[in-house]
Image 1: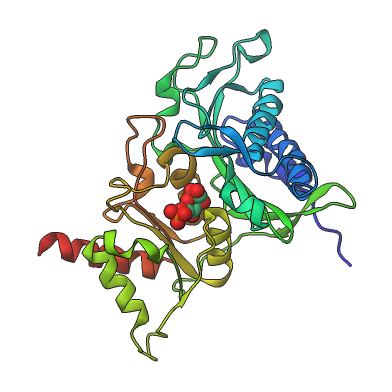
Image 2: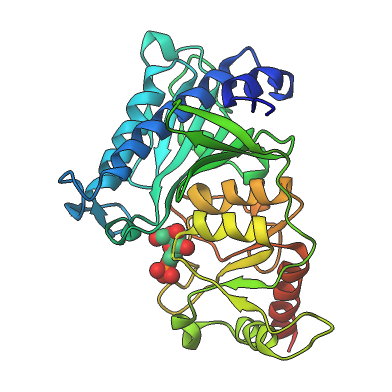
Amino acid sequence: MERHTTLGEFIIQNQKDFPYAKGELSSLLSAIRLAGKMVNQEINKAGLAEIRGKAGQENVQGESQAKLDVLANDMFISTLKDRGEICGLASEELEDFLVFNEEKHKNANYVVLIDPLDGSSNIDVDITVGTIFSIYRRISPVGTPVTLEDFLQPGINQVAAGYLIYGTSTMLVYTTGNGTHGFTFDPGIGSFFLSHPHMKHSESGRIYSINEGNYVHFPQGIKKFIRWTQELNEEENRPFTSRYIGSLVADFHRNMLLGGVYLYPTGTTSPKGKLRLLYECNPMAFLAEQAGGKASDGYGRVMERIPTELHERAPFYCGCKTEVEKIEWFLNEEKTN
Ligand code: P6P
């Protein structure tokens, strides 16, 4: 049986793909890999250790934090800070960004934005959760303290993005702009092995993922799209199948493998959408586009939105190109009527 390539070997083999790489991005990805293994270990024993349930505090989003949210956040911050490749980090769990300005960080070129544990409300009920990360080159001068502008870059500036999915198996999926590749963790060996090279969205799919409990709050265009998916049309392979896990990483990963589209529209409870542009939309959009899919805010490429604040939200439609374009069509039809 052919031996699979490890994540470390893959990164080195593709070192040339990293812009301006002097091994920094490789080292940064290996730090993320290490932190992912540590979080994975904690998640797998959540039911045993006293790390389930609420941490008794709220994050900047006003959401009550699970103990594992805090644990995962701390693990990624300490592991990434340990390396000298990043000069700052922003986390969905923290109000403000962190400045890393020890001696070892003074020549650092990169910043990381992270959602340390996405879908964490699912942990106590043993449903798949994930970590999402996004990496940019700093735009402020090297050697100076990182600034807010380094984090408020459009998604098109990302140099790398990815997620860890803690599911029936644990995987790390990432892109540096040369395709989207998936690595499966072998706990017996303690390494990630290349299991899904060049992951691809099919042109069209027949799964739609949305929380239909919010139907009354959806824009008319989204209501029309949902009704469209439910009409009988054998030629267009309809009706669709509804699959919604309540964990973006899990829904995204299944839709990329099986063909589908994920929707989180605006609504009265979330007038700008619920998902965070910097920590969720942009990294998943980068991965989707690199896999031949599409990621839209309903009217345009979500990665072209210019962020104005760290925790801003955006409507998010992501997956197979055909269905994302159908959603845009319905929303634009509503706009022009
Ligand atoms: P709702 C998790 O909080 C998350 O950000 C995504 O992972 C998930 O898809 C969505 O929110 C679930 O939101 O409102 O359907 O519970």
